[in-house]
Length: 156
Image (tube, rainbow, N blue to C red; front, side, top):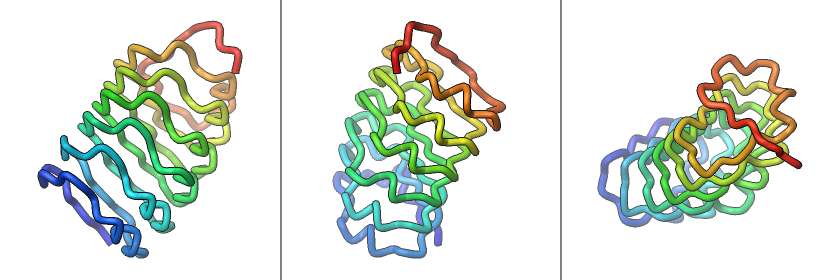
C-alpha cells in the first residue's frame, strides 16, 4: 500500500503505475529527470499521499487529476517549472495539505480552490510568480497554516 521511489534516479515512470489500485502512499520526490506523471496515475483512487518534491522539470499534471478523490496530501515543493496546478484540483475535497513551496513559476491557483473545505495547510512560500489568491480562499474555514499570503487585485 506504500511505495517510496524517492531519489531513485528514474527518467520515466511506467504507465503500469496505475495498476497499483490499492496504493495509498506514493513518494516520487527528487527524481530530477522526471517531467510528467503518467495518465494512468488517475486510476489510483485509493491514493491518499503523493509527494513530488524536487521535480525540477514538472510543468503540468495529467488530465483528470481530480479523479484522485481520496488524496489528502499533495506536496510539490521545489517544482520550479510548474506554471499551473490541475484545473480540476477542486474535486480533491479530502485534501488537507497542499504544499507548493518553492514553485517559483506558479502563476495562479485554481479558481475552485474554495471547494477544498478540509484543507488545513496551504503553503505557497517562495512562489514568486503568484500574483494573487483566488476569492474562494475565504471559504477555507479549516485552514490553520498559511505561511505566505499574496494580496492583490484578483478577479477570479
